[in-house]
Length: 185
Image (tube, rainbow, N blue to C red; front, side):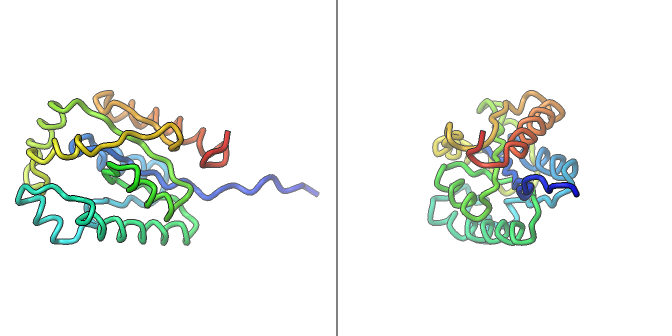
């Protein structure tokens, strides 16, 4: 009779984070497809008032982000309850926001996409019809708190190209899952 091995942890919930224009949605969709898990577009969880505020050129503060974080955290709890992983595109600019999401899905891993301000500005300015105007990008850089040494994840320069970013992310994520998840190894 074969002895069962250690229980495998649930698949990770991956948050592809960073300021606007770094390619979070593109990388997130591709990573989700490769992993065979759902993709959640963080922008879809913003209430209409947040979208209108950003369209009008006003940055979101913590109070305005509250209903967005609540809705996103609830969606993540449902993913975890179903026993599956997911990939989420979400700015997750502050540690407090990441902590809030991590509380909803403890098996969380972050892929922080970074980008030079000028390149990000050009990318955002070139997105027709998106609600996030380029003039708000500076406010995101001002509040951005990079991943802490105690946060599971990887920081990658988005200029490396989508294939390179995905390859590095998959390798680091496989290591995270192999060691059993948060804070192990």
